[in-house]
Image (cartoon, rainbow, N blue to C red; front, top):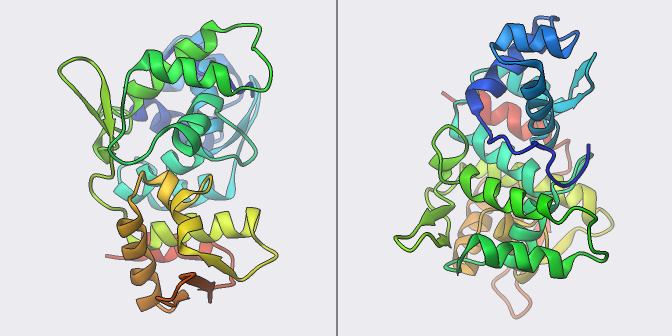
Length: 270
């Protein structure tokens, strides 16, 4: 799936994502026409939904077949309505990180451009992404379109607005911050999934790394260093890491199982 304008200019709509997920689980996602008929939209819009479906980490797909990812299977089992706060945080995590898919504007925005309290405009985000790409894209309109869709994603309740990551200002600019913190088990999943993918050769990281390096909790959740420290203290209380409040502030991994086990725990909570 292409990294720019994968959504074809259509906004994220969780109700449509829910319908697509349920269509796949029912075994009826055999064509764009079949998905469109199930969900109630035209086949052209199904292509944009498929783009969102892949970038949100729910699975992979083509015009004739779909496959749920391990994350997609867990969500289909526990939260097929895509309603729980943890599910929304996880959709956000996959959207801004690099797994099988990469959403270029989302990745650059959260891992390089934003920090807690930063104010910005869509134009400033677009200009940053254009400058940061190693090669100028052939279709720069894709960056402009995705910059617009990114801000809509975090300001509309039908998408991920309830996460309160971005706040729209009267002058039409935006301010980034962590609103309601995610459940510690969601933070743990993000941390250990990241650890497995990027730092698997070491069992100890510095707290400052977890606040500033790409795809870490500090970046994903737009969290301040103090908030990241609070995350780690919660995980230490659960026995998942150990943390030493010394000069280098080492965080040592104690959890070595598959990160998906943490999601099972989250969804099985009352």
